[in-house]
Amino acid sequence: MEMYDNKEIFQKSWDKNYLSEELIQAQWAEFVELKKVITELYQRKKTPLSILDIGIGNARIAKHLSGIPEMWDMVDSFDGTDNAEACVILSRQTAKELKIDDKVAVYLEDAINLDKWKKKYDIIIITWFTAGNFYPDNFNFESYNPSEKRFDLSKNEKFEIIFSNLYKLLRSGGEIVIGACYIDNDKTRLKQEHSYKKMGMTIITDAKDSFTATKEGFWSQRFTEEKIRNYLSFVETEKISFNSLDTYDYAMQVRIKK
Image (cartoon, rainbow, N blue to C red; front, side, top):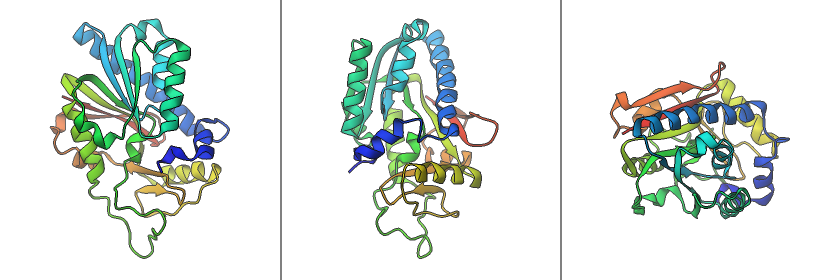
């Protein structure tokens, strides 16, 4: 079962009554910064862009881009993937209702399998903390006990494989944009835990872990700039840049250029 296959959790994840103010504001902060990246690449390329949205969720990015004609005119195609069928159904429905399904296509696909894709993109986006959801396959949600053995995240093979494959899908001059990822510090950890508890979940990690996980199968990793660079060792250091999304060290945007 994937994170959003639980119907109750799926509904709460989009319900603002269950979302913290930090999460809600991070959505808008990353969207403002994403518009700047799209505009920058469009002006450089001088033709509409092909976009791939990993973990499209409820098609929030496509919805808001299409609501601004000047932005939507910069988009040639908008493909989205998600490994949760409920998200795929919701996104397709949203695209149809907004009459943007001429540009938007949504696929049920796990990000780990994108090495099989042939299409190339100008921008690949991973928004609203999705990059932190790529947990290693050997993590056991049912039995994890940090007091017995702490999970080592000095490497995260799944994260590295996914981003290596995505980098290969970029056209020359393109970018991967991690719209928002959690910054690793204790205040952010407590805010993550509060959000999960508000949705009725049980935390199984502690203060020494660099990720927050729940018994219900949710996982979200926090990052430092150093850890991102280590995970993305196949990218030249100068092609990775970081942009804070707030003034309280909660979330940052990462741009990975090719």
